[in-house]
Image 1 (cartoon, helix red, strand yellow):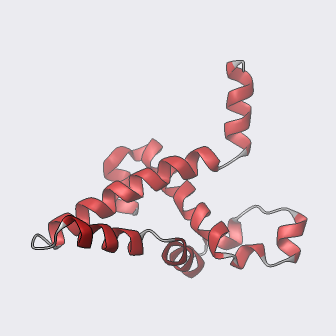
Image 2 (cartoon, helix red, strand yellow; image 1 turned 45 degrees about the vertical axis):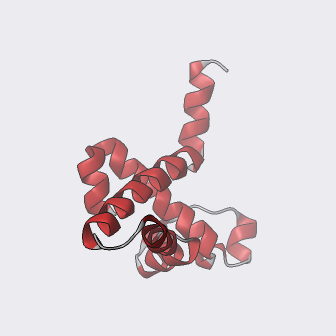
Image 3 (cartoon, one colour; image 1 turned 90 degrees about the vertical axis):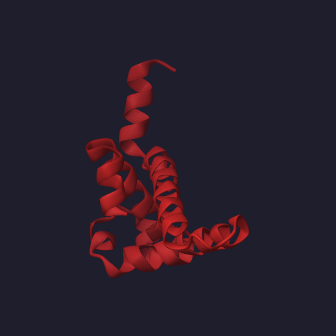
Length: 113
């Protein structure tokens, strides 16, 4: 695919930003639980991280912010309450974290997360 086509796809879709944001968030949360719970083994840390970066948790965080009102959705999603769907809200939050990471590096992504 020519570079121009790839750039157009990335501009129109948030999936690449979601991928990046998910990774940044995972690292930030892993660092946090590792430092906050030095007595906990790997299995316990994994469970904590899994809970904190779950679709339900991220959806609640995004829903509590004003991000959903600015989210672009198609007519079908609008009609079926897409702005309240936990999976879409979680994806939105991950995309924003990815964008913050691109703009501000790990420190920016960490502070936003």
